[in-house]
Image (cartoon, rainbow, N blue to C red; front, side, top):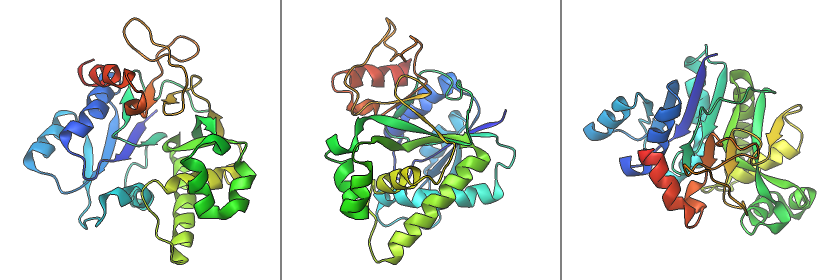
Amino acid sequence: MKQLIMGPAYSYDIALLEPFVKSLRRHYQGMCVLVTHPLSKSELEFYSKYNIITFELETPIANPSDIQVERYSIYRDIFDSHFEEVEHVLITDIRDVMFQDDPFKFPLTSEVEFFFEPELFKNCTANAPWMKGMYGNTGLDVILDEYIICGGTTMGTRKGIIQYIDEMIKEIDRIKATGRRLYQGEDQPIHNHLIYSGLFPGCKIHHNGEGAITTIHHQQQLTFDRKGRLLNKDGSPTPIIHQWDRADACKYVLEKQAING
């Protein structure tokens, strides 16, 4: 099975990339594509050393943080003319993601798979206002008692990921057409709105500790083995740690592990 990891590294310097890239290459040797700004010689050398494919944006993004919303259209452009042979795709954040095992260790059980954060919307002081600001009280009320679904990591078949990307683009364009400016992170309420609206029937949504990804921010308990690896419920290392830099005192241990192994 041919696999692909894709994410936005626009405006990131090498120091920010090291935990992602170095930990990735200890556990996965397949294709990895990062969307970047025009690269310097040293940056090109870094990407070449770790066999990372780069897509440099020719037109600068005025506000680099807008890449979080704009990335979906960029991904679609890439898929339009590349990677037709790919069967299994991970689209992911970069800065706060690290790897402990093969990211594709778990077989796909649906065309597109999502990952819960361990918190309900009604208890989150970030996600609840985001959802209310985007979809009003009515949109928030529908999902108050539902778990947040992280927009930073999504896996699926090539077909499933393209379908997901297309729905994200459609909704982003609809909202932009109203005159509302979308800011950093506001793809998160759109992501949740679309999933809870039933646009991806048959999709699989994984809880922390049960799949390929653990999203740390709201996690109340973290279990490590003697090697300092974060564990799933079955005692195996969770392949992907998202938001590792929000693990309070543990983040320094995780960063060291990501960079040095």
